[in-house]
Length: 115
Length: 116
Image 1 (tube, one colour):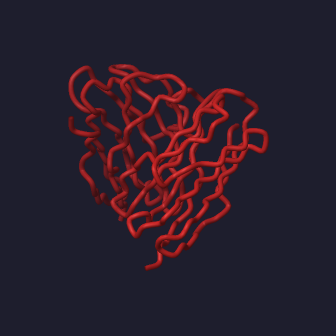
Image 2: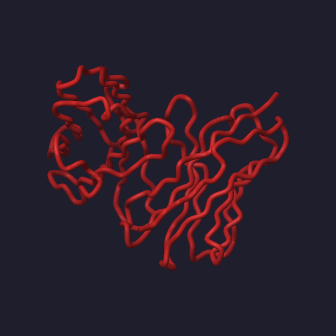
Image 3: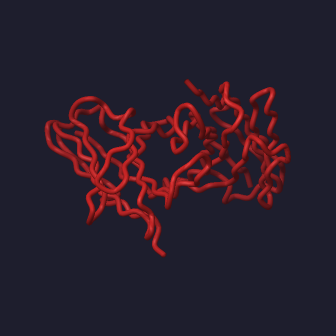
């Protein structure tokens, strides 16, 4: 059973371009979470999705960021018109269900560098 | 809002020795979970240990154990017989209401160096 797969692992974008980060959850997992890790900081929650639904996007910046988890295919985190401050590691996690204490399994992250 | 504080940005330990990493948190809830995650240079987030707040017994996983002091809101990680492979960033995390039963609140991390 493959773990959470994120690609690409490294992504370089020029200011103003779009970044698309992909996450395939573990088999059988229908809950996906995205976190952002700025340099020398802990991970910060961005968004929680189930298939075709955004459940909680309280950690998402109001502009330029969007996320989806379609019925078929991976979850996508999309950042439009990237700026230098978007440079960070973006982690995806998945779980088979939800509830307090349910363990989420993390991918290895995508490191986004904006030049 | 829940907060998690790791006051030690960096710690060092001699190989085979014991080290304790500190973590404090703030919540008014009684039912929640606490976690320690390890992040090596590969960036993979690896679960080290998990503690349920309603359990008084401290969790242990082989060389890793916690000292959970609920009243003091303290959750420290003890690593015994430290090995070179233990060198990594360690993050303490809270999960529970009201921030969300699915949402981790992470501390800023402690970088552990293991000296040969």
